[in-house]
Length: 132
Image (cartoon, rainbow, N blue to C red):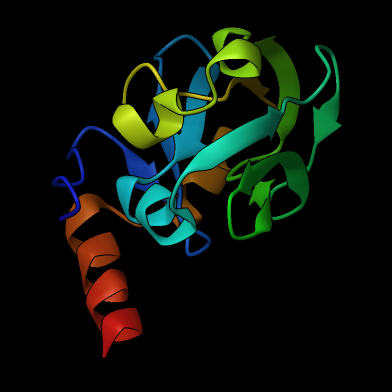
């Protein structure tokens, strides 16, 4: 069963989450629902530090026992930091998608893009629509 989606994050329709760090950067990961659909994650290809990413474009890759999936940038910006622990322990995403399983930190180039993302309740509605 998926964990509740934290209210202090924004969500993309592609099942990424974004947490505004309040300093022009945001932490990004995939949602608990996404990791549940992927099942056991065995590999994460992290983006390069300094890479410029565009909202809606692939920025990382998550490989599970059943599929390989792109992780899309929920906002445009520059990769400032990546969660190197995932290189050795990719299953952290399965265990703690909203916490220790974060993927990257992005310096936002256009904070206005966050307005296009969903809040927790609207993301929950999206999940319910997908399940039906």
